[in-house]
Image 1 (cartoon, rainbow, N blue to C red):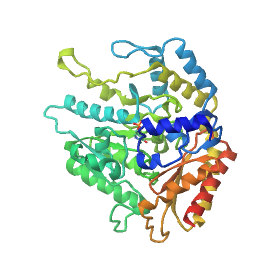
Image 2: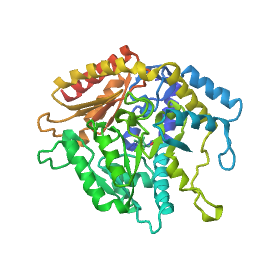
Image 3: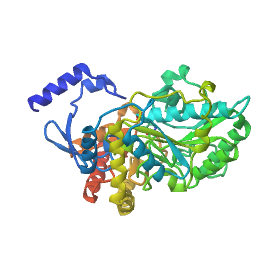
Image 4: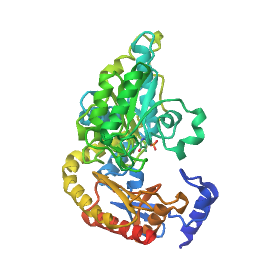
Length: 451
Ligand SMILES: *Cc1c(COP(=O)(O)O)cnc(C)c1O
């Protein structure tokens, strides 16, 4: 280890507090310090290269140091780095809004910016609540419905609609109550099936709640097509369409949280397109700037926007805004991101890569400690289990998936688990040979750790 690495690790351990990290474990570890990136690789302070198998936590899209995105940010810096959207406009935020409206599902005509996925969801919740307050006399639609296993971010509103126990349980007394409907995690089906398939049973549950409580519910929030943090749970075909049908039928707004799925992850630009639905609100963040800058957007329909119009003294404005809202550098990166999608026909070219990925993942089926392998587009979750037949998990203190991911580092691959689920989520720019390496290394490491 060189002197620079030693010094940085020492200072990191002295002064930094890492997110979602047991710092005691971190202090005992040999952390990698990333210094550079190039294409689909991260390079540490020792000069060692690693394939970025989780797109730097699900954000990177076209690889690191993508020429067009680098250039857009540099050229924006030469004009201005930041100016506010409170009382002023700025060029890139306008141009990006036009582009987003152009590519989003039809009807989402208004863009409200913030800077991360949690706030994009928080904003959608506040807008949905205020929408009903301002749309009808004696409004009673003041609650939300969300799904089992949901993850929507770490602020209080987004935690309230989320349901991953170890993330939110400690804060439970501070969270607001919501209605909870089962997400079809067919592998461990969350409902009594009584001969129905999991999808139908879950939609029936949703309808039961909506039928009884629609007058109390402002909006339904969902991770469309795939729940990320829950362990890459891919919903069965038709589920999202069913959710859209029911929310419409019972006059409940639909918020799709595409923070993780947006920008090509599922093989379509947006997951909503997989089942051709249009939500009332769409939340975007992670991939929005190609993984370069913290920027988020909450997109809504004209119907929602119009409920906020009125005389100043009616106070119908949306009283919410973050200091860096519409940051020009972030918006410039996002415009360049979308232009790369257009110029390089990224979505079309993804198809053979997705087929290859699906093919490569098949070999996990013969591992005795791999349960379900879930995949859509360029994302997969490989569930490690103690017993394949009973789907019994390993004790969580064994940290089996975590150990397999640590092992993969020695072979030049960076991946990160969610509990017992190993995630593979490479940049969309991943090359066939690189994809093969990531899957092979993951396979070998799971086999070694569970063997
Ligand atoms: C990551 C994520 C969030 C939170 O985004 P942050 O930028 O980390 O606040 C919200 N929803 C989903 C689906 C996510 O994957």
